[in-house]
Amino acid sequence: MGLIVIRYGEIGLKGKNRPYFVKRLRKNIRECLQGNDITGEVRSVGQRVYVQAEDVERAVEKLRDVFGVVSLSPAQEVAADIRAIKAEALQVAQRAGLNEERSFRMQSRRADKSFPLISPEINRVVGAHVQEATGAQVDLSDEADLTIGVEVRRDHALVFGQTVAGHGGLPLGTQGRAVALMSGGIDSPVAAWLIMKRGCAVIPVHFRWSEVELAKFLDNCQVLSRYAYGWDMRPIVLDHQEVFGETYEKLRSVGAERWTCIFCKRALLQKACQIADQHWAKALVTGDSLGQVASQTLDNLEVISYGIEKPILRPLIGLDKTEITALARRIGTFDISIREAKSCPYLPPDPLTRASLPKLRAVLEKMGE
Image (cartoon, rainbow, N blue to C red; front, side, top):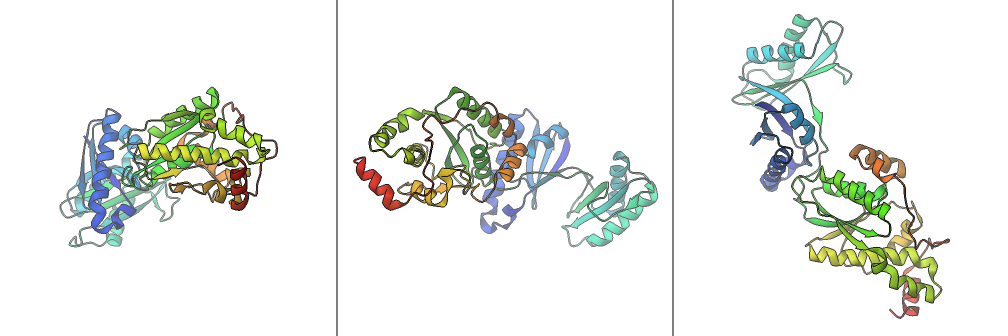
């Protein structure tokens, strides 16, 4: 069994609520191990989570996708003694192939203030030992070929030569539930992922108008489920025509086809509110980015949101398409989202970009609503 040290970030600032967040993080880590058939044990030590796992390399690969994990390192536990730390640091250097043509740096943290050396002294003493044995150059910048980490606790020390970044955020399930409206496009899966990163369990909902778009939605849900440790993600599919068809015919009857996108989004949000109530969800999530398309101007967003009973979370609102695309690539949904696409059958040739609440009320009155 090898040791993995897991670090969390803002969870450590939660004060009296921190035990709740850490407990949930441990639970989600255990679910990750079990879901990937990795034998392991999970426990808290100070402001770290320790995982003892049989397959360390595979465990690191999977655990980095647990929300709340800021970084993690395969580590060796040794006695809280400078001689033991020096010996293990040299082992780390040698396993990494450190030699006179490569560079390294030390990064130490003294959690036990009774340890006789402070952190800079640990760096200096251990670094000198490694340099003398390997001939490697010291480079204190991020450009160093190897960073050897040391954490000294009261009854042991940890030594490691690898730090893998996680996604950070909050443990999934600590912030309740939200219904995420997802198409087959690029934006909405990224919005759902960002809300999950903030600890919110997501219920994905798709309004089907095309089997092509439905397939992309379901495949993207599979990708998102790889990050959903702590939550059983169950996609919901509804028929787009059943939800919006009647409203569309009313719009046509009063000559207000330019309002189609606005009324369509309102209809979908209203239906999503019903689903939220059925599943004890507190908010809705959309992939809106301000000004990206006609329905996402600030004027139209005000009108679309009017009368919707649940808060609408828009995590992409300040991002441009380049930033959203980069996130989609990072989380693994991009290649799915750019597959063959089918346009919405209700899309008007000249959609309204500057709606207003008085005009909305006037159209509603014409429609008899």
